[in-house]
Image (cartoon, rainbow, N blue to C red; front, top):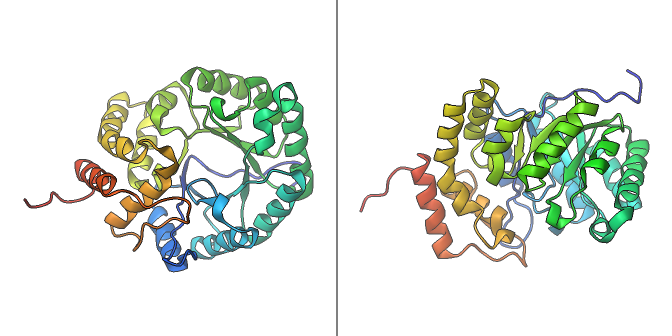
Length: 314
């Protein structure tokens, strides 16, 4: 295969995997392995580590590499493994990208560096130079993380330009705007029909999947992988009634997990996983605070409403 052609991976139901911690702040490796196995359900096509769900900003560079190696060891060679690359300089991003590649990642998702948010008219040129440099350095499939527009997400013209890089195989579409999502979907598919556009804002999943998508990528899929796989199957059948029913079933859980303050979303996911018995502890690294007692009750009630926990006896 020529080096400029990226291999194809099915990323249609990608679970972004949380990262459990021990009481001393170290990574809970046995809990992580159990969570990876929990996420590897029929219908889940790929796993994503070192993203927001994995609290990547709290990890050292060495820990990021160790997370990828641990995931690869549990997953084996057959399921695609996506690793997030979060860096504020091109040189650091290339180093982390090479580390993730060598640790066993199949696809790298490039998060926009923080300086892009303030780059204004230069953002498109900076983004193209950034992605092109990583592409040349690692020669492997890349995905783009489209941030919410209010957090510095790319405009449509920039996404289309980046899609012209042959080894860009997917976009994690988190614009957090249905108008932007549909504009990006139509523009990207017009120039790259093969590009996998994966919505990642759960607030908009029903609408995004109905408009058009190539799957979904979400931390929620790392909590209820079976339900998100069913959601995608209903989408492929164009079964709007089943899609609405799934959305209704998930709605209380979404309200509990994605409540304000949103900085605790992934801590709440771990609380839910602990309530389900998947992991032993729902700990995050400081400064993320423990989930409040009221929030734990809200999550428990939502899991019960979704049929994932038995009704409690009064």
